[in-house]
Length: 153
Image (cartoon, rainbow, N blue to C red):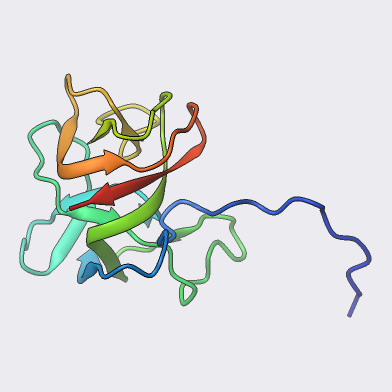
């Protein structure tokens, strides 16, 4: 076994789907319908009491955000950090979480889930054609492609 001989000086501040702090929150468990990356907006699945899927249509109802978990293989060996089809997905319904934004956001902006394209399921501040997050707002500012803290009330 090889030994690690060097470390970077700067760690990532967080990763998509990671809880922000230890405030009280509400987390539900649902079976994944298909692969679901960490830190994306999810909606009710075909069995709405038990399943969830990535939001991909402006008519979808917001269920919550898929949380990062240490119990998943986290991409080993393929590099895909996601829940696999039928995995139990931890879905944040209320609380604060790190998410990737697709446009610059400022603390206090309302939050929306982007629909369509390569950024489907990620987050922005544009209401047109996207899914609103009831009580959702950004607690921190971030540029496009960076992580921001999103709070769901």
